[in-house]
Image (cartoon, rainbow over all chains, first blue to last red):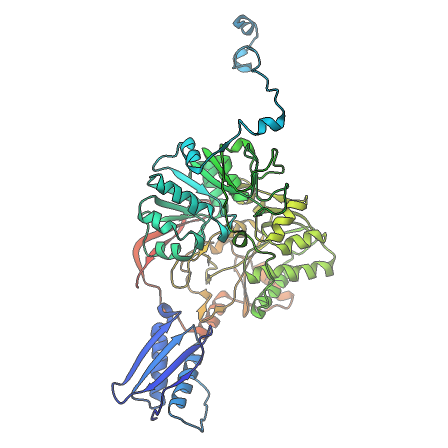
Length: 98
Length: 509
């Protein structure tokens, strides 16, 4: 998926994650993650974010994520929404999350 | 005259102070004139410290009835630091966020050891990162009272803040002489310190006329009194009434817990109870009240940390007696002042394992938890990140004493699962925990099959603790284990003052 602009999804509320996706020409996925549960879930959140970006065919991007204890399904939804918005995709087919 | 004594058979068994040698001079001034002098009031804290004979290496103690509004601990330790004292042990009944300034006095060697029920905030964070060479000792309220009584913890000088005190040392957590003073209600934990400390200094902002009756601490336990403008911030010491939670998850947990108590057979005319602090456990009172009204039954006594919910039920005639070791809110403090059968008790009476204490008369107790493991062990002391952020309180005391101990907690807090394989820190052993109630299921300790049977008969679904753990993990995923260093920064005592667990220094940034 081709990213056209910087876009955001999510909030800073407890149990949510705020994800900012910025287009990049090269360098792969650069992830800046902070989390209130970094010690216990940092590695897992990073994996879910990278998987979601890969599934949507995003190769290069700067992804900033501020996590407040979101569950995996929320992380997936916010990352997907931010990517769709960055790609200016209109007709989004939301699939059942994994 | 000694010949008189020699004529008495078995004199060695009878009298040991010789023959009457005349009474001392009688005082003839008025009581009022006398009260102004020959009393225990000293001009400054420094004078009291010198009079008490405090030396380097001694143990000083404090109570936590002023909670987050306490100004006594910081004020006293600042003074002791300025006076040049070093290597002191600080034995507090508990410490809170407001005690972060102690960090400086630990770094400069004034305080080298701490005993407490709990730690929070910046001080807790620093200690988790290895601030103190000697591990902090964590005791339950009953364990501390027992340790002080047995001499395991010897208090050289107790510094006890009091919202009222007369010139001879009768001190209390409220004042009968005015309605505007600070009120902390019960001074149950301070009473133990006053009784056993070698020297007792009362700090008060409210010197009242003798006799300050009723008192929490009698004058014979008090050596010196210091009048100071500032013992604490009333807003931090107590705020109005503890509010009932509106959180639907907590209400669901509370309602379920009340149902469990009833189904297990502990809600009968004349029962006894204690509610822990925390939204869900406090809310249980609301549902119990309703059930008691429907059944037309009364509670014989409510114990513990007392809230306005309990005192309201007392005033409605639904609870005969209140035994109050610590008042949690202003309503509770005011009830202690005005209701005759709302009775103040000390920490040993409350929960010492050395004799049959009030906790041993409990039908049930509702307790909170940070973590519960599949062996029913409970942690209320360290967070899921391994950092100290809580207090033992009376958790193990009441769990052990009550016929039915019910631990209430949400199955997950945000992303953090509450029911897990192994708690970070064992505070209350599974051997005294009977039922776990979450928003997503109930588990009964296999030690209590008869309770599980009764719940099922009442139509409640009972899961195994492992099922609850799996349910939590399915939602949150399995957390990575916390990385600790080998160094021990905290030692956790069970209520009999045996070591039940240790807290290690956390690793990382």
